[in-house]
Amino acid sequence: MSEKGTRLFGVDPLILHEHYEIDYRHSYAEDSPFFVGLTKGKLLGSRCTGCGYTYATPRSHCMECGAPTAWYELVAKGRVHTFTTCHYGGEAFLHETPFTLILVEFDGINTLFLSRLKGIAPESVRIGLPVVARFAKTPSFKVTDVWFEPAEER
Amino acid sequence: MRPVYVISGGITKFAKAHPDKDFRLMAKEAYDYALRDAPRFSKDMIDGAVGSYFSDHFTRQLKAASMVQDYLGLCPRPSKRVEGGGATGGLCFQSAWEAVASGRMNCCLAFGFETMSRVNTWKGNEFIALASDTNFDFPVGGFYTGYYAMMVQRHMHEFGTTVEQMAMVSVKNHGNALYNPYAQKAKRLTIKQVRESPMVATPLTMEDICTMSDGAAVCVLASEEIAAKACDRPVKIVGVGSGSDVMRMADRPHGKVLLLPHERESDYVHLKYPGVHSFRGGRMAAKQAYQMAGIRHPLEDLSFIELHDAYTSSEIQTCEDLGLCKYGEGGRFVESGVPFLPGVDYGMSLPKQGRLPVNPSGGLLACGHPVGATGLMQAVFAFWQLQRTIDKHLGDNTIQIKNIKPGSRGLIHSHAGTGTYITVSILEAT
Image 1 (tube, chains in turn yellow, brown):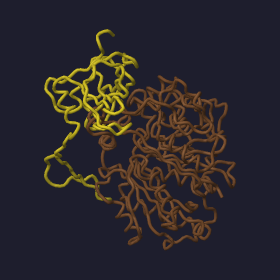
Image 2: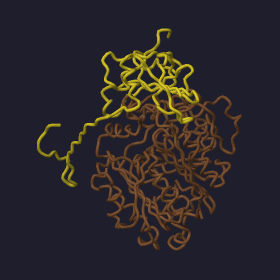
Image 3: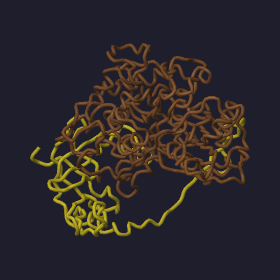
Image 4: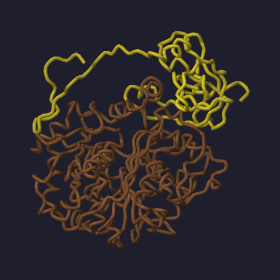
């Protein structure tokens, strides 16, 4: 927003335009290896060193028993556990609509993974659809560096 | 803990925008209404206050509750802000209850507000989505409707719930609101109209989803002594419960159902719980509140429910959490007509119409959802229902639950992002 002066929307009551913007120095902290993993085409989950509970997401301590977890590499193939196609969204994502969100389930893993599903018409998405992870060639170090597409055996 | 009563309440009209009033004035209007409504009640009886609003992004004023405290002339009495996403209002109500139940205060004001009109709807959706995990969930979806859509998609898969059953909730709640002048979006709808309204996130359409609002609500909670002194017909708070769930839906377990007293493990042999189809925190909240209130069969023991229907789907899911029907039966529960108001024509056949009305006010779907005020709005509607004063406050008796007598109970339920915080409170007519 570069306009100079004050922009008014109304005078009674007096309503004016205000712009607000801020930069953050955001640390992924203990979850950092997950994001580095994505740049190498690896999807890292967490396995509890105490009770063996396996998470498909980063979580440095087990929420079941409290013990530290260890990183493990997920097999990049899973199935659609549930899905939706968003025709609207938060402002930051409005230009990307429609997009399809899925929760992915993996064999033998206790929890799910939220991602986008690409390369398929929204009306063809179904629960149980086999999907495979794809990784960005040029990473943005965000969780969107990974997404899923229908697996070939479809 | 000692008994706590609701002795007065007030609400502003919920609207898309109130550009002529800031949050202080909105809260003041609701507060003045509450002061006027209990003639023997006066400001000097108030020992302190709890304020609730959800988002600093929406308000663009940190510590806004301090400014309400001073606007109401309550300084230097104790005050604090409570925040818990969509459940902010319900948590505020329970925080005020704690203050009185513990004996710390004899009378505590709970006030809540939200001003969501300062940004456009889609920026607002972005702000709300910042209440999901900003490393793992926000960058992917950035949209709460999308999260709830995934939840109900799984509910449909597990249980056969249909979009038409969801649409019936929309017809009911928007229809109930025709008799509630406080509501933002009252209208007569058909199932077909709900389904044909613009798709937001499959399978949820515009009419399956609540709107953003500006508004405020207050409740005055007091000890037995103050209640007897200040109020002709106080309402007793007989049950309080709350629960939580894991922030990232992806991380939720697939285990065993948390059972209510009238359920058995054999009811749910094959169900993996809560997964992403159910709100475990809501079940926990209900279990605690029922235990405290001595409720064993919610469907028989309650006269009405005001629950957090931010989405038609979450009303169906919540009916199951509250044990009004078994898990998986929520869709058929709506179809049966049980949660509709008796004597109102919804334009459809409802065999058991009106057995236990859910959201007689119109709920969030029709009243609007000014987040910090919402849970308190439910408390005020429940208070008026149990006082049998709906006609006085709404100028229309249609949604007044007819068989309210001393000992009748109503339940209010407040809920935050995909079920991460949930409160259940049970109120009783005296």
